[in-house]
Length: 136
Picture 1: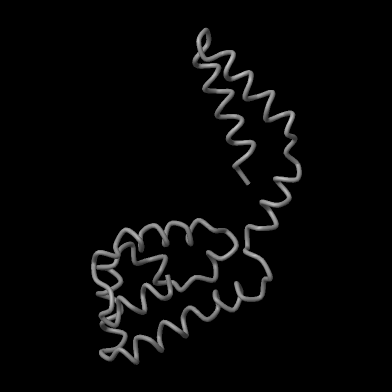
Picture 2: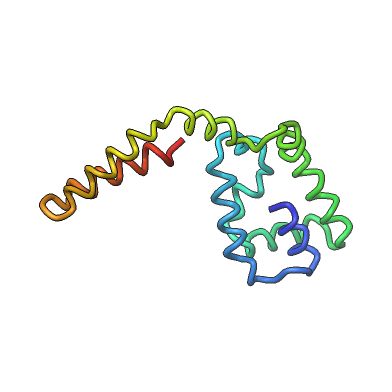
């Protein structure tokens, strides 16, 4: 996000980066570990057009915009750089260690058995299996 906004605010990217911005913004705002450390403008500027109307008044120069972004991202970047691992790595590793292969196989076989006679049950079993394996 930091690099995208640096490049966008200094003319190295254009509106074709909109989807990337929206996706990154969603991911960052939904991350409870870093949401509170994000610059306020990430939370309030919902698209690149809104960001542009904000950043162009922060500074008329590329150097001024770069300095502003470096300063405003320093808190979240310093926080993230203190870890030897990604913020979610510990949670995911702990979750994976608790998953029993027998359970996965049993639930999958149950879903397969139900698919013809009880499709709704098969969907429910599959959904439960996915949530158990994938949800943190």
